[in-house]
Amino acid sequence: MDTYLTTMQVAALSIAGMCHALLGSIKVPLARQLQIDESRMGGLVSVFGFTLIPMAFAAGIFADSFGRETVLVAGFVLLILSVLVLAHLKSYRMAVLSVLLLGTGWSALVNVLNATQGPSFLPLDEIADRLSYAMNLGDFVFGMGAFLMPIVIGYSLRRMGLRSTFMVFASLIMIPLVLSFLVDWQRIAPEETTRLFTFSDLLHDKIVWICCIAFLFHVPVEACVATWATTLMIDRGVEEKNSNLLLSAFWLTFTVSRLIAAILMPFLALLIKERAMNVETDHVVVIGLAVIMLAVVLGLVTSRGKRQTSTLLILAGLILGPIFPILIAQLYGHVSAELPTMEGRAIGLFFCIGGIGWAVVPFVVGKLADRVGLQKAFLVVAGCSTGLVAMCIVLYLFA
Image (cartoon, rainbow, N blue to C red):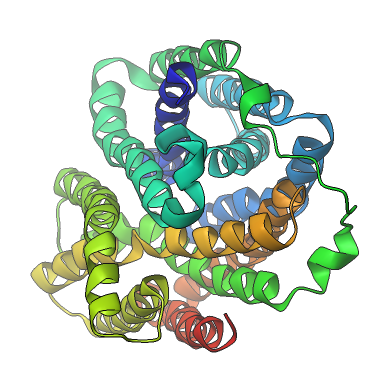
């Protein structure tokens, strides 16, 4: 394995995780500073998701056409610009601009980083058989960044203020940017094939669509729980400072669950093989997690006490963590085998369709929260959880 690639991957995934948790971490102080309500805060989350729709797919096309390293560098630059705008934030319009840059840069990052998970953490000849392990391990690092972000932001805002906090964060993003120039990108470039696959081939593949639609339902569940976790707890009587600590606990369980999945799934695969069960481990795990997550969301809708709400949010982190790595491993593994040279476009399409859910659902939840309260608005999230269960079952039937 390339040491520079692995080091860059770890640093970049940490930064990507921090950016993923950024809006949830600064939601309360940002809303207070700009004097905006839940609807407009939900609008910012939707702007982040909306940028995924065109930019995730554009990043995939550029990655396949011009090389992954070009897209990765562009992503880092956009993230730095986004954070610098946050550092000088004076209006809601500037916040929207910052989130647009954040979403665009993050789209570029996740497209490339998901394609490089396998070679970053596994020998090249083991990627096909152990891709879910690599995805969960890499996303464990991603989750560590997300876990640390609320703690770091909360401490830094008290000690240094908004501007200095984000200037330091912009400097941190420079680290993986520099490391990306040391990676041997030619070594992990997709192999050339005799057949020229087209975007039409990708669009006619049912497994690609099933994975993408499953992600469409999964993304808003994760986004809404992460964004409104602090509000749900404060509404139930948890103090603001404690809600930030519990948000970090949510991201910690989210992160640890991926490490647990990376460790335990190979053993579960052996158990399934010994019992001659005709089912893939990935399908068993992801269906089970989706069903439990539906129960957790319904629990959040009906919860009336701060202890019950806090416990359910921590459990949500534990359940949500491994779902995304398994879904994208199913997608990437299938496309690599059946539609080689289309990996970038497949990942782009995956995040593009997921971005629709990210853009629409938080906006709807925010609007409903202003009218009927946040808990009742989470019935929309429960509907998305139901859709996720259904699509995971369909994936098992057609895979």
